[in-house]
Image (cartoon, rainbow, N blue to C red; front, side, top):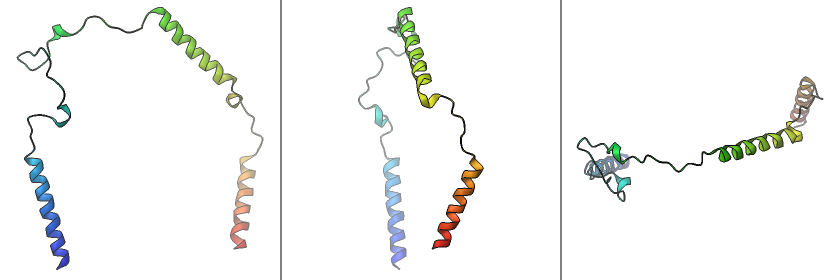
Length: 112
């Protein structure tokens, strides 16, 4: 009996929640409350392409690219100078290490 009352309560709660969602105001998206409408709108609903700015404010002159190149080259040299970036010859045999680890594991298992 208690399970049936609980199930009825859950179904009623879900129905009320769905009813609230169905009644939500669909005239305005929730995340766009503070956004104003575009200044120029055409009849089709798309923005007017004449209002697109023709100039840009990016730093794409040659001095910018020279500085970016120097930064990348410096980072590459620092990476190559790091001792961890150098080739290290393998001094241990992986098979030997694996055998020692399995032997230690077996010894530990046998000690308990």
